[in-house]
Image (cartoon, rainbow, N blue to C red):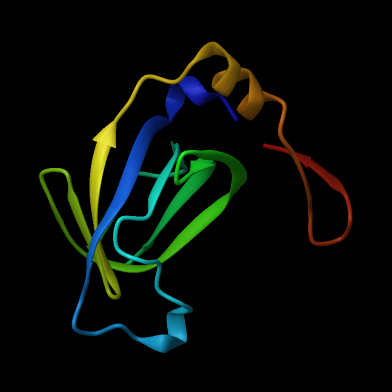
Length: 114
């Protein structure tokens, strides 16, 4: 995965929606922040995917997956369960190197380089 082709962003949960459908997992608390690379531009009816490097100010590598996106409007992403504010950021050299070196295990136990 080449971070140069991905958007580095901060997502901040600003509110819950009225739907709050439990089938999509536990909803994050309001004010929760995540920093990382969007694995794809958000699209309506698809899940928001973020390769997270920071959560609430602390390093926390992981993948965030939202409930399906229902609306996108100038820096605001509304999912079935939550509303997020999106800020584009500039990654540090260390954050870029961290993503370039990530390796995941595939479904059959094989190494997958992202």
